[in-house]
Length: 188
Length: 344
Image (tube, rainbow over all chains, first blue to last red; front, side, top):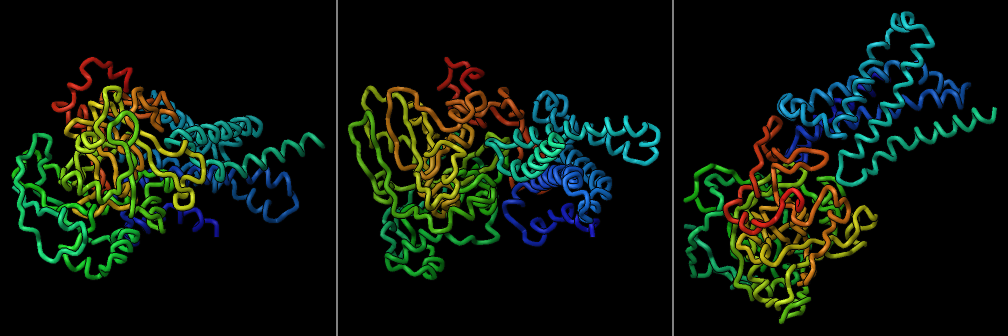
């Protein structure tokens, strides 16, 4: 059930591009696909990060336990969408020509650093990597995901001319859960 | 040379045969060559508000679509673009792309929002515009009467460069802003024009939240406003300008970034001091008063050296952005004494 849910967002652009033939999308299809892939990666990142606090808050629920078991799959899928987003960026920009100058823009730099973090986490997502690093170090390394999330939020806000409301509904629930988790931890 | 039927006579929407007048214009050098006009593969329905207005006048919508002669006052000339100019083969963007890919934050921040939300009962006809400030002829003008008074509309194909680094080529219909300035008759104190867009929170869903400081404001120096290129558009491709593109009157200053082209203008005030403009208020380090297209001055978050051509498909490349959007020969003189890095 989970796999189609993870693959479908990647196929979604086919609908406005080829079936609905949306004029707005057709005006700049590359940009649409680029933004869609980035958007999907951001949503999945926010979603996968809720699994732990949900599990911590409701440890007995079979739902939260099931989600917790699939953390790796969703996390690696997040990286895949981020990688597609980055690939699409280079297709859209027509190569690496402007990358050297784009780097210096905080908007691009934040996205690049966030992507590098996700790449490191995906590369160390195998059981062998956990054994090799040792549980504690592995966990420490994977805490970097929170930095990646903050960078993604920053990257998303800078992508638009005005503050994009979507950032609130993508990352708002996660922020709320994290606050709840901290409050719980303080009490006990 | 292009045949230009005098549609002024058609402003009453009751004409049954084409007017006999023929105007021959020598094309000035800013005219874009446009041999191959993109045909409209699909005729988009005209905005409902205008259709209903015409129906009220006793013209059935069906008859309107069938007869090319019956026209609203703000409807442009036929989309027949002069094919004497074929030098660099710039092709007008398709009508679909021009009217479906819009920034009009009054109707939402998505590019696809305006075409949807601006056509849900928002009335752009009838419409009045106020001329005010340091002028000898202040007052309110009905848009249709105003166009008649200014001598009708003409067609111009302009490059359109958005500050977001994309571009279109648009066949606009309208009149030179200089004609309107002449009508207003500015006094010696008038140095700038301040343009104001409508406020209507019930019709414009974007105005219900304070994403920008409504109403949208823009400004021009008086010498910019009287430059031959400065234009007030009332139509696109010979059709009335759709709501999402800024019906019924919209500023077009092709050597500046698109956000200077304020839409659905309700007031033009002639001022002695430089007016604030909405985007400058919003982010003064990113958007200035002048907003001249300049490939050498980057936006803080992205380069302005190149632009994406809208409507050219998935692998549409980018092309280098031209100084003053290709109108350097015409407008550079306006800014001879200006540091364009400082006054971006």
